Amino acid sequence: MPRYELALILKQMQRPETAAVLRRTVETLMERGALVRDLENLGERQLPYRMTKHNQRHSRGTYFLVDFYAAPSMLAGLLDHLHRDVDVVRPTVLKKDAQSSIWTSLSFLEDVSPLI
Image (cartoon, rainbow, N blue to C red; front, side):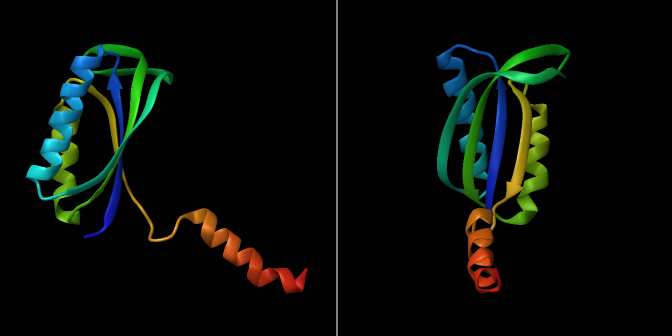
């Protein structure tokens, strides 16, 4: 199974409601066969621009990253589910590479350094 990262922007809520949304999201991932590796809270921030979702305008949001393994076939259904969730302002799923881009660029510099 490939490794993915789910970037979530949740609407501004109190801590118990935020915890309930995260629990609901992680349970949805696991019900669909995903293996969740990590959940990272990036904090509450001003959004880069006002976002409208479910007829509500949002200027602040709470950012989270969920690192997980899943089958590619379940991503479309997952995103559809998250787009319908009234507490999620913006869900984005990204495929993570086996190596991070910084390590790739560093190894590239080592290969080129004799030429410099």
